[in-house]
Length: 366
Image 1 (cartoon, one colour):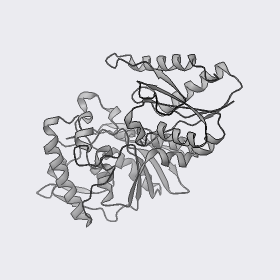
Image 2 (cartoon, rainbow, N blue to C red):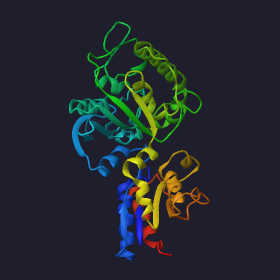
Image 3 (tube, rainbow, N blue to C red):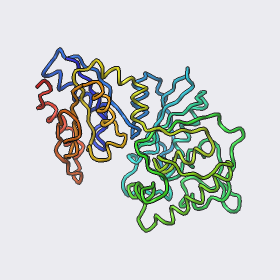
Image 4 (cartoon, helix red, strand yellow):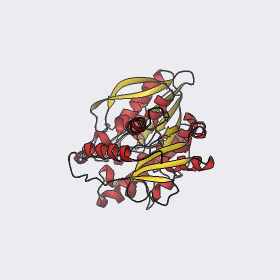
């Protein structure tokens, strides 16, 4: 029997590749001669470019960069020298996972470290940057990345504003572009379609989880609006909010003024790159999963998009998830994980324990 094991990450608990390993081991315990194709998936969320780099067997380049608060952290990118392309996730060095809850503060946090990694990739002859936007800690419009690439943001007296300084965005009055400007183009991968502005924009929807207080949202949005107007003026381009510009605190929005940039919903792009459809064709059973399948999952999330391809080829598909959202969603069967108490210190260990228990007890051959 042929299995395609293709889980997404279980956000905050189990990474996609770890989940795939657990599922594969559980199947082999019951059916040692099963034929397994393992392809952990991503949809533009945290870790998308890591999985792409591994799936494409690219060189992983490790570098030291700065985290969202300016502390040294070990980062990496994947390099495809033949295509002059680098793959990296914003979350690698500018991710929310690198901060404790009390450290989250979008008035200070910056994507500068991601800019450092991109600059190092460009120094290795990369011209096309595939940038995974999921899991960011910032709402800085990609300004930190631009600084890492040589742009200068100046205050009212023409002085360079120190990166990681309090209220950085509110102090911007002038912008200087590097000469020459890096020869780069960007493809940004995301898993949300929110605009930057509006009631469902980056600040009201994603700001609170990044440390922005509700009473500060209006001022922060006004500061961002003024900074974007300055970037538009500097670049000679129109200020136009687009779908998915709200992802990762407006990174794609800021980059779009100064570089060729396109933004893609990550799941379909990922599936095309790793050839997922050919793997589906040869499978008898497809096993996927995500932390909590809900109404948002149908908006481009990996498990949902995988289900559409599985249906196209008439393949049985099993979903592993918590909550009740997976029921009546089109999957042939759902393995429901117990809910976690995230207030407990051992919730990570409990999540893995629950996952292994439920997967081992499930009859994949029934």
